[in-house]
Image (cartoon, rainbow, N blue to C red; front, side):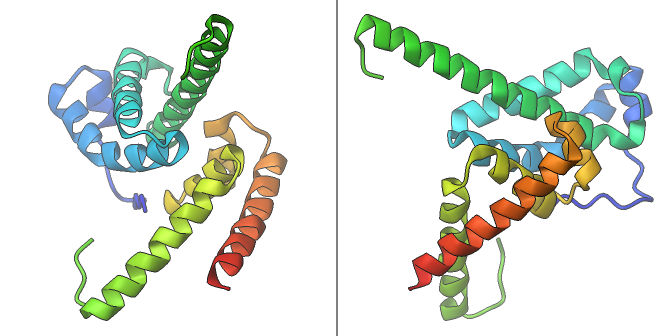
Length: 184
């Protein structure tokens, strides 16, 4: 989970000035949380790595558009989210073209039993997340895994807050049902 304390000072101002060290620091801070979010949406490791890289390139080129240095995380996730949408649209266009052409397209101190049980539960949870519609999966990941507020998720996804609340509600309910069905 991405946890940024209120007192943590990220070198955003230095990044705005073009400091390579500041950008390296921001990359180290956000690359893994962004990757986890993107790979859960895209379900493709290489594409996800490319999107994270494109996100940082875009951020570097457009840092002047960031209005509030403290909102850097939400801004980066918003860029990554838009890159995912662009990728889906590209895939849809490619699939449509193929159709027209007729072509085919953690460290633990628990014992081994506890570790295996936890890994099995985590795997079942992630399989359940993978079955959810992308908008619900995205909202759940951003809120519960990355720790973004509802307002931040609304900004990241460019979606009304009421819709985010609905996606969280129905996503949690569907995930609960999936997990209950799997345990039977």
